[in-house]
Image (cartoon, rainbow, N blue to C red; front, side):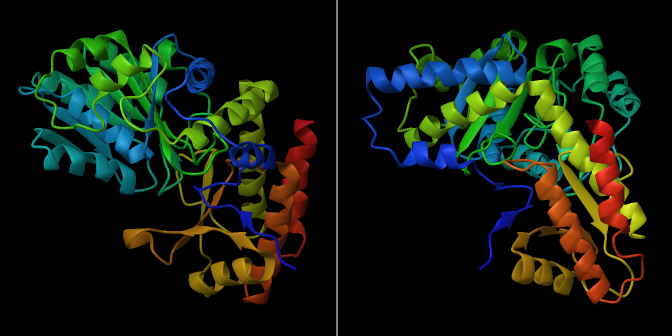
Length: 380
């Protein structure tokens, strides 16, 4: 008997209550039933984002939602600055290129966070830049940036700030309005306790002024103007993934019942425990600015990454993620998002200890679990 244990940074483990809700009989989506459901979810999402802004719900992934934001916020005459310190930061620059949006694509060494001063230098030197796209928590490198400070820079220079919050919303401290984030996007399959299939965006009034005056939007299905028009009536312009919306209401209720700041603390404790365990096992954390939602560990010398991840999956049911591009075979990533807690994390760390030891990595067996346990005990 083997239980599937998702420690991948999306999709993440979904609570049974959410899955059961999605399995119940459903009504048609063009009904008062769905509109009431949609309205409640929108209100809950505002509480998760800590915003008074409009929040849009799209059928599609976080990438779809980001595409709509990039296209909508950059009409003819715009120029976007994209900060690219990983696979997903690079994706946003590629979208700009594909839609013919002039882009300045700033590269950051993977595992490092951009310094807000770097963005400020760009904005001072190039007045043609009208928007900035950053990744709050870069999933591919498990690295977080100082979004609050970047928000101050963009506001001081009157530029729109678009933020990929796909692995930060619901997992890391995120205060959209206080930090001056104009568009924040996320997906359902990370910290929001759902399967993949929904994308969400918080949109400020500053951003709407640009989007509404952009009649040349190339995006049809992901058109923010159309989404907002429908959302004003608690509806969607096209057929929604209404079973996911049904599950969303239960998932968000669970998060809000836990308390948003308590959820942040739970995730932070698991991340700190994992990093402490790694140190005790003579394993290095990859990122120089680690995100709490995902931890990336360097694979120790002499250990085969594919064998490590295969053993975790086949023997313990623990699914992890490897590195991408030049990090392939060099790192292994563990998520702290979704329906997991300290007990789950301790089990994962114990399995990692067993596996590393069996593959010849030298350390005191039990040291990792003990170090992690100490973090959790101190938290309580």
